[in-house]
Image 1 (spheres, one colour):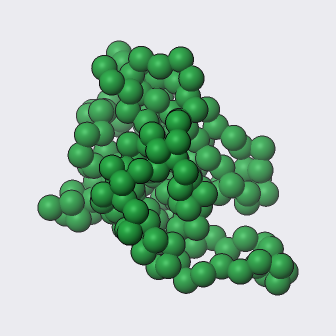
Image 2: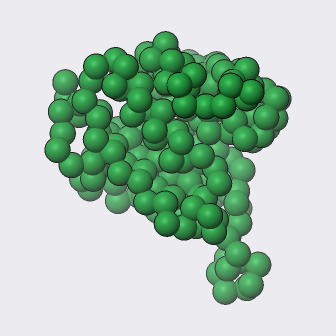
Length: 199
């Protein structure tokens, strides 16, 4: 199959790495190739945590400039860090809730209105699905399921190569049993929200 490239952007504590692992496991369950790379040295400090993956036949997980098919952005400003990896054909799923860096509190940098980051994406990309994943996760029963809201929304985008059943099976193998109901609800609510926005 042609490589399908996914870039996940977020900050430490949002579940970027866990999401990438679940996508990888879903690929194994489906029997398709996957190569992936995460940078999570700053994960415990609220720093940037990007993950790159290619689904299909590939040797390197690093996405070429403009080669991303799907951007999953857990935080509005983090989506712009990936801009050189995106093209006008990229589809993005973006969480609206900001996580303001500590440098803003210290007065050494600034954070724009989150809508400004989303508006910039909309001028550059084919389609941007926008959702308040934190509110949806709370409604599903656990704020920590924000990443499964985002995964569900991603699964609804055109061309995403993994069917829901493979992702759900991977979730069941990788997430704590005590939180499974909330995570499954979060995934489904994200999927439904994105499906509605894409109509």
